[in-house]
Image (cartoon, rainbow, N blue to C red):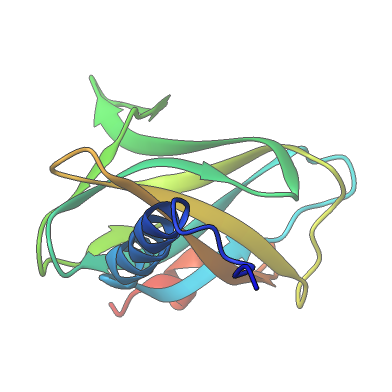
Amino acid sequence: MQSPFNRNKLPGLALAITMLISTASFAQSVQVKDPWVRGTVASQKVTGAFMTLTAEKSRKLVAASSSAAGLVEIHEMKMDGGVMRMRPLTGLELPAGQPVELKPGGYHVMLMDLKQPLAAGQMVSIALTLEAEDGQRSTISVQAPVRPLSQPAGTMMHKH
């Protein structure tokens, strides 16, 4: 009787399983703390997602996506000649062991072309793509609650 397994395909299967396990452990090496998304009003098509990311080993946040938005980018806001400016980033460094805060007025994930308004209490799924120093990429999934638009950002993100 012939085995249902093709012996020539077993090494490939073992490699795929090993890659899946290493990708899962790669993604788990980044801790996501206090994710949230700012709520919107009916006609609003953009909002921000915020969280704190801590990588066990140096990583770079290189992309993000969400089914709630048509376009998702990593952004930075900073003062430039006395004017607050926002710009997209090609990547955000996550130094080993150092928390990187994505917060209003700083780094954040920008959700654009929203498919519907986001109300307080809803959950938004966000996929974060991370890159290791060797170029290996992995994606982690984040569930972020929507917080009220009227709630001041400062009370949600940090102590004064």
